[in-house]
Length: 232
Image (cartoon, rainbow, N blue to C red; front, top):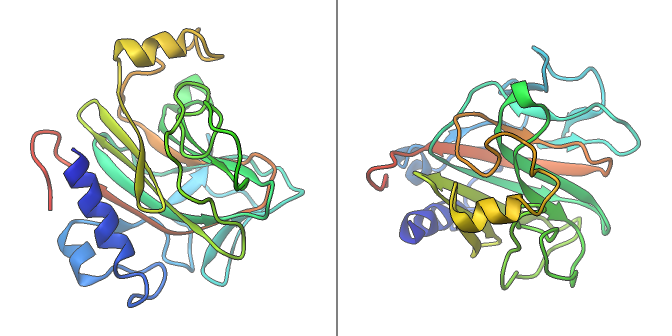
């Protein structure tokens, strides 16, 4: 599992200087990666519970998909659902910014999902609310430096079978098993304790959240995996 996710991170980051943003290198194409944003159109996304993107508050500018500050357009989700996958993205926020990426988002139960927390707070305290953690459930470990705009961070979530991994700037910082005693016991201590099946895997959507702060995304890429064997 770790080897597979490490290959994904190397595949994406090692070509960053040679490949234009929001494009796929030949090795990425061969590994099965697909773009969820081409730098010009966000058609792979739609507003939560709607058929199209919000009229305002999310915009494409200079190759970035930007959640604007001072507006409340709401969350956006992928048009497609995913089960086993690796999702990779680049993000940047001004110091103090707050956003996140959620997965296992089932619109029938609301704006909920396992959230990869994103805080632009270099030197912030570790904990269940820290960057790259499973928000309110599991804390990340040994976080690398968190970069502040105009610099950007690279994140990756890998879901294969029940095994989930969170990466930040090329480093594995959290690994957990959906439905495990560790996960469910921590869910029971969280604000999600009454949410049916929270902490378990499901086929669902990926969400870019609206937490108020301005946040810019690019290089949104995904590849679907087989839970039985590594895909390279």
